[in-house]
Amino acid sequence: MKHIIIGTAGHIDHGKTTLIKALTGRETDTLQEEKNRGISINLGFTYFDLPSGRRAGIIDVPGHEKFIKNMLAGISSIDVVLLVIAADEGIMPQTREHFEILKLLNIKKGIVVLTKSDLVEADWLDMIKEDIKEEFKGTFLEDAPIHAVSSKTKMGFEELIVDIDKLTEEVEAKDTEGHFRLPVDRSFSISGFGTVVTGTIISGKVSLGDTVEIYPGKVKAKVRGIRVHDVPSELGEAGQRCAINLANIKVSEVQRGNVVAKEDIMEPSLIIDCKLYHIKTAEKSIVNRQRVRLYHGTEEIICRIIPLDKEEIKPGQWAYVQLRLEKPITAQRNDRYIIRSYSPMNTIAGGIIIEPNAKKSKKVTAEYLEELKLKESGKSTNILENTVKNLSDTYPDSLAILKSLGKNMDNIEEELKSLEDQGTIIRLGGQDNSIFIHKDFLKDKTKELKALIEDFHKKNPLKFGMSKEEAKNKIFTKKLKQKNYDEILNMLVEKKTLKVSEKFIALYDFNVTLNKEQERMKNFIINEYKKLKFTPPKYVDLAQGEKDRAGFKMVYELLIDKEILIKLNEDCTLLKEDYEEAKNKVRNYILENGSISAATAKEIFESNRKYTIAILEHLDSIKFTKRVENDRVMY
Image (cartoon, rainbow, N blue to C red; front, side, top):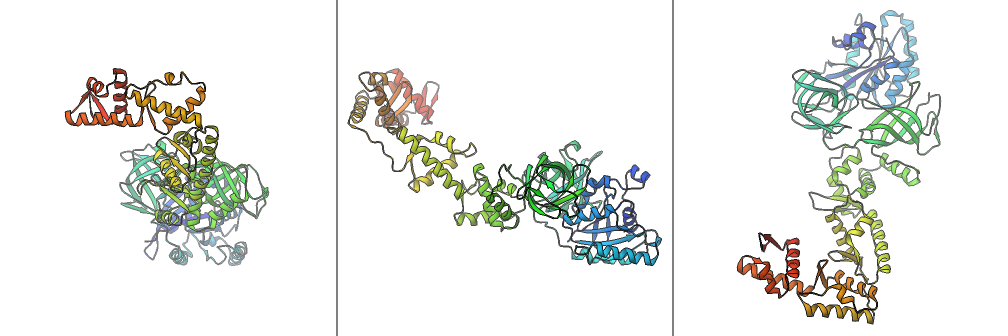
């Protein structure tokens, strides 16, 4: 079923609230101050049962210029506007400002309602209608019905209701399949129930028992109860005004301007990139770093405007801008917003959010602007590719990509698979814990990695390669998990770019070349270890007779790097073949006898206690064996 929200707009004291009461029989001014002063201050809410059987939500907004902030909190979610103009006064300043806001928010359906028509003559009424037609020529209200009514006598109400019903039929249905989002316009506590929030669901749906998240604070809560138009319901859908009873949250933790949404799908941001229209009637150009008021959903945030494609933005111009906010916003791509001057407060601009999680742009390049144009009007796959490209250095999963996209994309896995098949993006990790990087990112990182290792080889010609861990820390961020790093290295091995051992990486075509003297050193070291076996020599003893101590050390370390020698600890190093023999001796003895003691191992190795303990403790550390009291068993 299609759900509709009707909103009022117009100058103060033109009869908006009285009109709604006459249509519905219900009062929307609930504050005592509103009743005392005879004006609306806050938003008013009710519903209207139409002849077709549809029940439309009604939002009545205040008309006074001081309360435009409250008006904006309600008007952003409407489908149809009743632009109210008092017949005895005609178009007034707030009529025009409200109408500019409606255009900037891309409201497409509306009816002009001439209230207090019983107070004027027919000729005057005709003149006012002509003024209205001239005022709204070329806008969404150009061909809108104009109804002259009297809330006092109900004159013209029958025809007005028929046209409201017709217009609501033309409204497009909201997206109920996307992610649930509800900008909060009220929050309060009810004794015995706890925290309640109200607002209009702008996308998706919410059910009893759902876990939701309150942004930007990222506080999670459980949906305990739902009321739609003051009737209990198990479900709330896009286009409906709802009151939601939330469990596990204090009323102080949620307020007007917050967004209640599906958990883990949004990312608050202090910087957003936008397309902005500076209205023609504005008195001044918008200049760089101008401080203004941003209105989005039900939130007001102070921010600065950074023009991206112009030095200044003249009235009547469109521009790409970056908005830098003084507190976080929770938005999605294609959301609408309004800009008012900081002081005095006048509506001066509005537009569309293109990138809700932008990065601070110090220098605006042609490439950056092209990216914005792509995000504004490109295909979803192009936007997705661009998002993965920008996020690659964070190694995002599909949820992180979805948050950054800033819009609903239920087929994201399908789109990612398509880009993967094209070779545009690369999937790392298993199907259930995938992360994604762009091919250009991998290309750049490969280039950096090769340059780093090449430099290492030049400085260390007798080292097999560079430490894998050191290379990871220098080229990749800490966010890259070890298993994904290993996947990247394996790809580069397959491409014959690198060769990799357990601890080291080297360029694929790099080989250590020893001169005659270095070959002598290598053979001497190996032979000494072969002779002494499980009572191995100390390095200092080996090096004692060497003239070129530095060269000897490099050859010794090369043998360790190439795992010809296995270093167990600072005092014990074994030849690889002896190390494997020691493991086999321990394994075979344990399999035959159940366990092995240090004393027995010492006899088997024909060694002393110091080296026997070093071997056994090393085998424990690699989880080959484990110690149980004074013996070892297989791990």
